[in-house]
Length: 214
Image 1 (cartoon, rainbow, N blue to C red):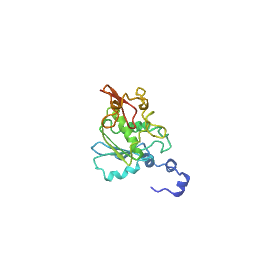
Image 2 (image 1 turned 90 degrees about the horizontal axis):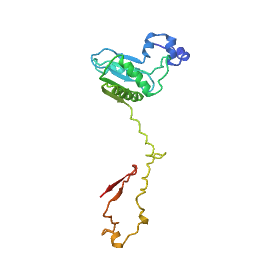
Image 3 (image 1 turned 30 degrees about the horizontal axis):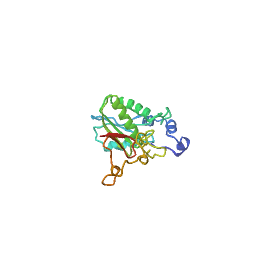
Image 4 (image 1 turned 90 degrees about the vertical axis):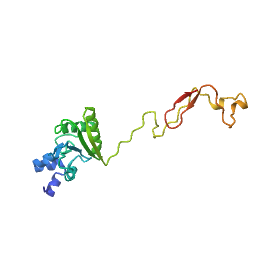
């Protein structure tokens, strides 16, 4: 397919070029569900688009994936100018789950996501599992899991861990008065421990806690 330079200047967007050229093949190439290879006897792989929204980047997979595995691309809505973009990853994933069910009603499902598409594919897998479906494969390419944010109260605004709060029941060391030199010091020169129950403080960046030992 050839595109004249004047057409690019007149319609610099994919949606504009689609309307200007009026080609049904181009219109189909912007559908949410893009058939890359519809034939095959095994469960298909559904490939979620990266940040650009197009699934055309998965076309070369048809040369590497076995012939009996169908391949479909999932593309963002709004590329053809007919609809708006999804409001969230969860909304986008729900839309794509509905799309893949038109091809495969039940699992096991095979999902693939590249870059941003990996986040959407993961959310699709979560929604499918919640619906009782089997997800046999979730392939993640060039993506990392999100970093968990600290819970309220676990860290300060700068991310530093809070120090353990002082134990209100424990008497400060400086206020304790030894009854005698022999009873306040052990043979190793360390503070002697009482024979009754006492509290042991936890250390580290975790919330303060205490345990009672005999």
